[in-house]
Length: 531
Image (cartoon, rainbow, N blue to C red; front, side, top):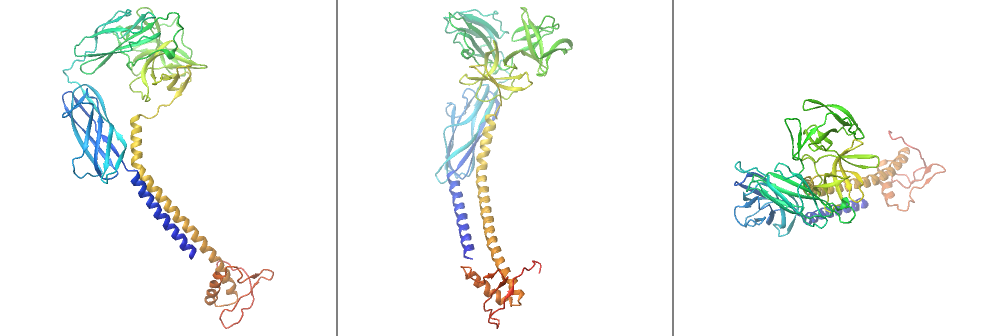
């Protein structure tokens, strides 16, 4: 009994300590989440943006700083600095969940993200600062009124030094140029066709080799058009530039295309005809010629045996031609560009808006295998990603190392938004995890105690059973006999009591207070459990 009492006392101490530690952890890990609402509207309209705090205990006060694009929205009161402060400090009694709304006016076309920033802080009712464990950003999408102009074209475009090829046309968006080796910067003169449109220019610095200059025209209604100049700076006795040295600038994801009434196709301002006879044209390896129904006409095309891609041969007005990938769903063409490793060839596919793009990369143009393609480049320009399909039929993202041209498959991770949701969910469930951990620990201790008690009781019952078996054989009064023997047996710590003579299978007994001085020898035998 003393052992059992000690075990139970130890168990109680563990339970008290566990509860105490749980309270300490809860106090040490006070946290709160912040949610920012979203809104849509038209320029000139007013919208409301709400910040909501969900804290682990009552809120004593809070300052939440929210960043935004001050060219798209502005607060209806106060300065338009790009950061606004939400103050939960009006002296009232706050609960664990509180919200505050600020009014904004839409002043420009576009989309802006509203995020928690700066020295945002939350103070609990007991004057302890709570950390912001997670935050959910909001978004404002601002549209232009119907009266706004959608003209995003240029009326003139010139460079110095050098000459655009072909000559400038408002409808053509891509040009080529060549400059001497001593040219360090390209001077670009551009004028918008609509005075309300805005122009921005990037990529004017000229480095040896290929350079890309982008002129972005944003119409009054927010629609964007980009003119791109691919300039080659000549080398003066220097080695040819490597792909790692080529500079890239952001480009549009989808090329401008149109199918003309005469069956020709206009791609980026240049007209192409679809070749119907492949006589004298070399078909790429891994492709076979097929009959294809294109816009109601039977023409020749080629199809990848493993890739499944449909290729058509397009020829420009100046007689230059090449294979293009035809997207059967979008009805669009993209250049057939390939990169290769030993035994494997990769076809670079165009990047569409529907693709889920990895975070941390910028959409750019890059020269691979002598051809310029769309890629996603990392900030250090060590790796780029391209979307494509291998000659083995594997389709998806591939990572290209700039230094040596090696290629490997790349798996896209979840978007930042999804990660934020996961983090927020983890913050909400961490308290429950600690609670269930304590429950499991307590149940484990209870089970352990019951196991120990069961072992002790079974040991004692085994000893009592042996005494009962011997006593019942001789007709001894079991009540008096067992009471005496069991008490004596428990106090007999040196196991000297009732020694068995294994050679004769007999046992000796003392005075049992039943009128007999000695109990006669009994034969030791086994008693079945069911008797």
